[in-house]
Length: 311
Image 1: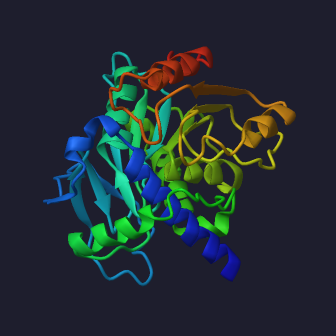
Image 2: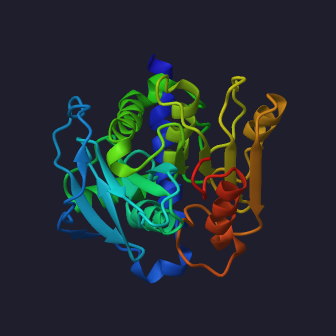
């Protein structure tokens, strides 16, 4: 257990430092973390997984890279973004933003993604999952980040698909699937057509949910610049979409074992390796071809029949 805890700590440090250092070089002029008031979230639904054990700091938000981030999340919520009923397909996606399990990129990897999915007729639900604690003060948090930068060149191996390392987050993801299925009629969602899409740390959570989420059972999953370590893939693993930049300083040089694992299990997988894009490109409009990942993902959803109502 101590070893698992240590792996999680190292991963968090490496992932958070690199995610923030390379998330959006085009927004370098806005890289300062500026505290902001907690945005109104009138549609956010508390998932009921309880407060994060031992947490003392209150949830806080800041702006950076022209986007907004949440940290010290101790109570998980799910925010629906529903499509126009006239174009709804019945498919749904639970969106898990990234941020090294210490912060969440709510705009770039959450709300903006959900809005784009809803525009395609797919119901989207942004999961604000519980996070590891950080200092309450912004200066102390920034100092902690600066210390992490020094180790950014030595990314740690992720905790693979270890459900124990992400127990609170996995509980949040399972609760999100349960809630969407419980309200599927109200939200016009087919309970058998709910997938999950995650970014960086959110991609790790997506993989853990797919492989160890028990009742979650996502119909399909998207792994956007997450680690691609080999995994034991069950015979009924969901179709997998992966997007990664070759120059991703965190996961670009770690091999593609996950892709090989999915193929060896004879499960559907699509892999986009972009020449450039760094880590954390998300919905930022950059001059690299990585910006096209969402269009590719939407076409992939269409290929699997999720952009039309089920027959």
